[in-house]
Length: 89
Image 1 (tube, one colour):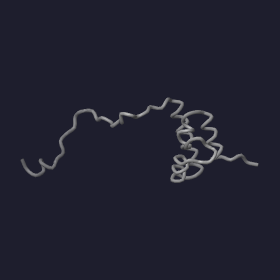
Image 2 (tube, one colour):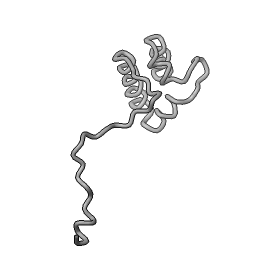
Image 3 (cartoon, one colour):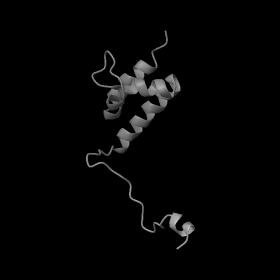
Image 4 (cartoon, helix red, strand yellow):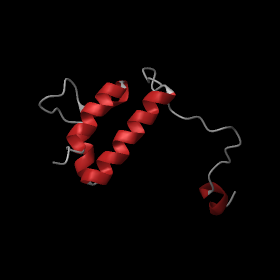
């Protein structure tokens, strides 16, 4: 066996498996839609880095962090969007 054969990686003919933590929670379609919507709106309003910080931090007037709150229900989504898009006078 020459050096080229030794350096070549072994072929992987089997299907690739994706790591899924044992405690992973699968979102319902409605929850996934709300999570995507609030994330998109936050990024548009604040920019990516600020949106990540906003969505994962606690805020006065909200009972939970914005991302899980908005994901959980339409009411939660509305309360988070109210912080992102204040009513114009």
